[in-house]
Length: 204
Image 1 (spheres, rainbow, N blue to C red):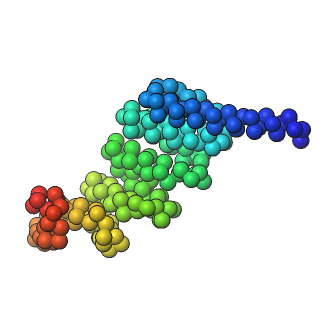
Image 2: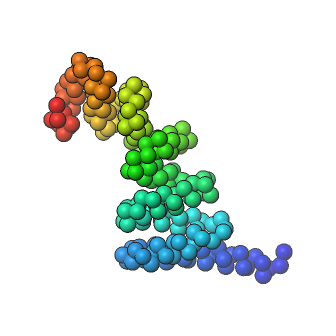
Image 3: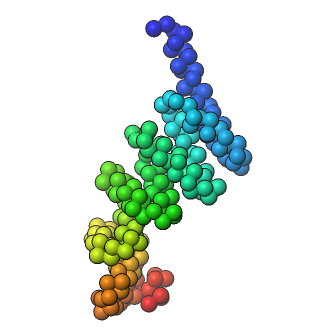
């Protein structure tokens, strides 16, 4: 292979990274539209490159957290997960994708994404939050028996999690939905006695 071909590849890859850095710089300077335009240009390139992957993730982030455009964020996140599953950013991207589905009320898709994170990346630092989100998805799909199973897993796996009061509160609500008020009262009592400083304890 001629040296010209190698130089061209290196040059192209360097250009992708430079464009991503330019998009990041634009975001830091609050030039949101410029950042999105630069990211969009990179994402349209039919190549696999770290700069393009970063631009995809950044475009999803900007749309989700700054522009409030959940559908556009989902577009970029889905594109990333299909093309860059082995990229180090994949866990955060899948978490953001699941959160987007959750915000849209598509709890089945959100649950699927959260479950993939739990099953594939079990060492994720906020795995208790992932478990809780799965339980809430199940609850919101009106599967209260399933929600109870998921919530009990959280209480057993993460006994010191900051989410335990929320899990207990949702357990009680699940029993209420199942028309089992006595069991609900027992859980509410456990919540107020075990976590008296929780704002959830004050709700009951």
